[in-house]
Amino acid sequence: MFSKACEYAIRATVFIASESEKGNRVSLKQIAREIDSPEAFTAKTLQKLSRSGIITSTKGAHGGFHVLPEKMTEIKVSQIVVAIDGDTVYKRCSLGLSDCSEEHPCPFHSRFKPVRTGLQEIVENTNLKDLTSGLISGETFLKV
Amino acid sequence: MFSKACEYAIRATVFIASESEKGNRVSLKQIAREIDSPEAFTAKTLQKLSRSGIITSTKGAHGGFHVLPEKMTEIKVSQIVVAIDGDTVYKRCSLGLSDCSEEHPCPFHSRFKPVRTGLQEIVENTNLKDLTSGLISGETFLKV
DNA sequence: AAAATTAAGGACCGGTTTATCCTTATTTTA
DNA sequence: TAAAATAAGGATAAACCGGTCCTTAATTTT
Ligand code: FES
Ligand code: FES
Figure 1: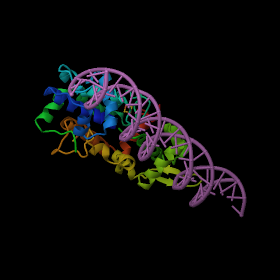
Figure 2 (figure 1 turned 90 degrees about the horizontal axis):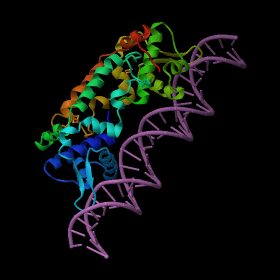
Figure 3 (figure 1 turned 180 degrees about the horizontal axis):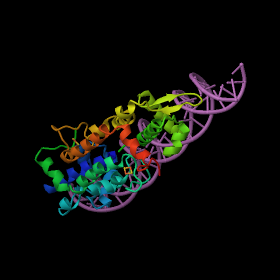
Figure 4 (figure 1 turned 90 degrees about the vertical axis):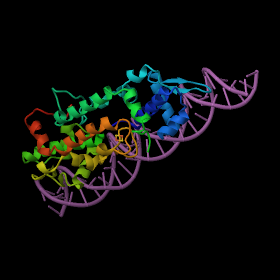
């Protein structure tokens, strides 16, 4: 569904966001520990998220990553997905035809499209705040 | 969503099934041409489908692939998917946690699960006949 | 000013997926 | 019986993805 990099990206962003709510910046090392991901690889995807303006990074001692307050409701999961995987998840034909359209649909189109649209809707309508709340209340988890 | 091999597998099976309805067997060459897929690679996935009992192959001149009449309603898309990609599409946690459960859900679980279940339902409730009908009537396509 | 801390980023590695090529096995046709 | 047609399958290659390592840059602390 999502690439591994994208899965790490969402988990990392949710963790960073939840710590930002508490007023903390977090280091790469902490992130990798909390979401149980390979450190160097996670670093690459954090760089992309940072360049995309989803998270903010600060170098040097006491540096780390955080999410700006206004981003908590502004940023939707879809923006993370697009930054890492592109928009093919919502666009691509289920059977690999070069494009998906009503005019030239594959045999699975009519059944598949509602599902794909459902996915698109949840990622576009879920923001960071929506995801951190369960984490803070202890109902949801980012590893194991 | 599905692997390339799986996309070819579904397209190929739908084509073979539609020709079988007309009483024709089809060769690898024809299949690759009709679904616009690389011949040798497609051959491999057809072998898997054959070993899984989804399609039937016959060697020699005038040989080729076909689908047995009873399979037309018996075989569901899900069986093709499982034969090629396994069942991870319906099972895997959206954020890559080692398993997806209500007891230890990731932050996206409650939103994602209905979508994943929707996908599972359409692949499990769609059989070959369902997919060939549109193809035969010219409403759906297997290439470009 | 020096040392420590931290992110950025380039170079590289390994496995899986996708894809090709060539040989072998089986069946039909001539 | 020989030739042609066709699928099966092994060996190999290319591309991509996930992952590691090491050096550099920026910032803070001492
Ligand atoms: S054309 Fe295949 S999903 Fe739309
Ligand atoms: S636990 Fe992540 S989708 Fe269910």
